[in-house]
Image (cartoon, rainbow, N blue to C red; front, side, top):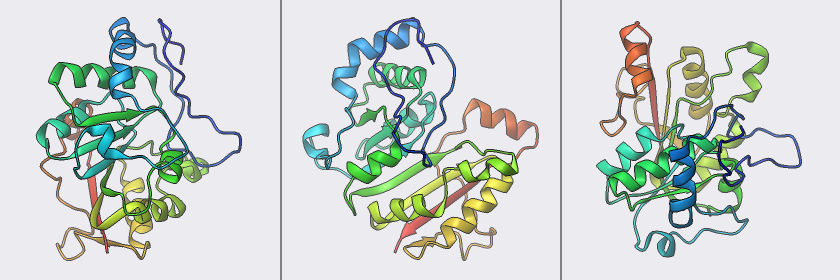
Length: 240
């Protein structure tokens, strides 16, 4: 991941092996994305710090805080932030081109309710977000790790789900989405086994999967998959 122009380090590497919220990907940062880092980073990028985040000084107001883990190129993140101006969004991503792309979208669309932490979301959860601090969590299309021997690398595992649940306020939600059915089935099993979470679709006759919430947009990749007959599964759980 070597950009054409210098950008801050966002590998989120740690000294001990463990499950991370990301996979290092290739791809070059464009000139526009690098410029967004340089010109907008001081305003919208939050440095990782192993101490509790104080959202009110960061966003300039008191509002529900939503965490997004792994936003890719930020298309959905910007759409949701624009649609929900009364909520604040803390977005975690370590892919430099994606961070630059979302910074660009924030500026172009005038989104004052988005901040980015270019660091491993697991460490952000552990050290920056206190228990009961979140009104919601979004995890859209995490890497499914298709091969059986790689399933242990999947993000949605019991320890992380327990950590996520502890950071949610009572009544807050966790919304996951995937286009890989075996991963959807594992997500349903792992989320359903967490005692602090309740499935919003458990009585809806939908096999435990929720209808797509209106705020989540269809990405170009998703639209192409649907045209080809691929499925997409949304899971929405709430904190008891």
